[in-house]
Length: 328
Image (tube, rainbow, N blue to C red; front, side):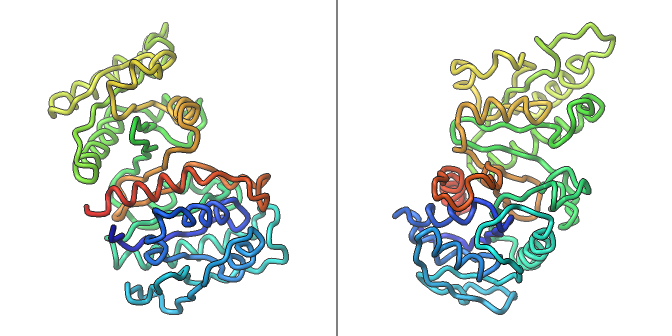
């Protein structure tokens, strides 16, 4: 497989991502991908963590951020260094990493601006210290930085079933106020386009209701006023879609077998059952950006840092996905 170059922003310096990265590239089927990866992060910290975790790879530091494929050295881990001052190889997450992460994204987005055919994977990031309540999540942060005219769409992808929340990192009390038919329609059209162009597949969609059993004693029913009109609009576009379904019983095996994508109204409505069923065998995709952005579906997990017990399932899923869409 002739992989297209892949940019990896290491993200939070004190997270399990470095360990997961080394465990993933150790797999035989990913040996060819190593020379196609451009790491953005601290060379010194990466090297120290690598040795501490018991891995051995040669590292090639690239000084020129004007990316060219010829700069990637075969059988080396290629990296553009981002300065980060640290005392310990593994430490607690703190606000000190915010500027480092900002600079990492700045360099990666500069490269991606001129090379939209590249893919971006970013490691987990502590939203508390990095975003400082300025953005709902990394998805929204990247949309602002790229000045994308599209609306952000979060898709948690697994080959068996994928899920997408209409509202993302919102408090539950704000969900209803932020729901509208236009958002639902935009999400479904964007995901449908992605499945068609990248996965070469006609997706079957299921849409969940907001209220228990899709019913409410309130005069305003989100199912009647918002969700059902959106479903009717999508059906007229000749897209396979059904719903709204009651969320409490939907994630049974007999239901999931009929669909490719489940559209939920809020974050935990679809991510909780998704992670219960597939644990970390899924990836977080951001649709609507000028490039393909992937994030392994796990957090920094500071408690497991440096213990060499983290499972690389999510990053392996990300590499498998990159392999799958490589020719598109």
